[in-house]
Image (cartoon, rainbow, N blue to C red; front, side, top):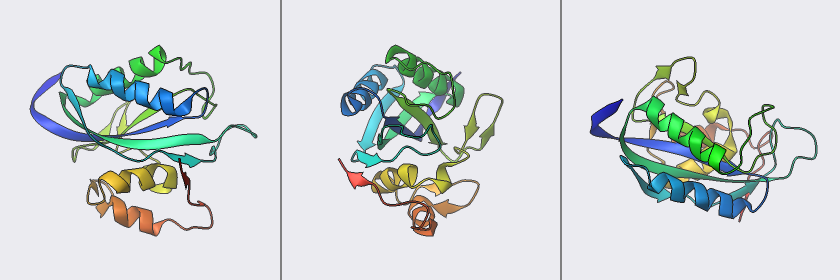
Length: 168
């Protein structure tokens, strides 16, 4: 589905297998080739411990990117999944190590809940590794369910459970 109006969407990118920085840059490069998608700001890449995965999972590099798109949310999701597949992601176990992970965090101010897509991303407000890079490029973006800015959500996280990542 195509929209005539351009929407600002935000995605999270992460990688903890292979050449992590290369994988994130390759994913952005692939995104740029999609008709109806242009990349705006991209955050600094931050290194974070793997959260929720198997013990001894390698650390992630995480980033966030702003997209301007005329694609519908589900069409955009399908492109993200296809890029992950092209870059070697095989979905077996939740939170397993992976060469690339791309999540649609925000799609304008839309609230979407379908079998394959939930936007805003249901865990983004709990994850420093998502909020920190996103706050770097979109501190004033508003979470449409919680009605808080990204900067405000980041401030709300307790430092006890989420140690700050290191810059890469």
